[in-house]
Amino acid sequence: MVQAYILIQTEVGKASTVADFIAKLPGILHAEDVTGPYDVIVRAQADSVDELGRMVVAKIQKVDGITRTLTCPIVHL
Image 1 (cartoon, rainbow, N blue to C red):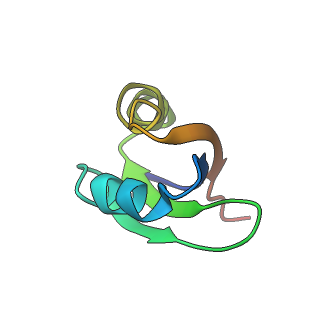
Image 2 (spheres, helix red, strand yellow):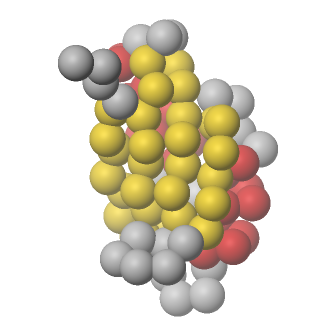
């Protein structure tokens, strides 16, 4: 199992809508709208890094109102 934080920038005024929509997608543990350089922070999980990448590209990046994402896989050193 792979988990990651996905940092999302949205169009102005879209953060809450984006967070609500993404929170309902399979594999999403949490989706919160926040303040700062990113508008939404998501915690997601998938069976593999490849599946995580497909989730981000095929599902999350296609959500209306998203302008940019940054995926940060969680590591345990």
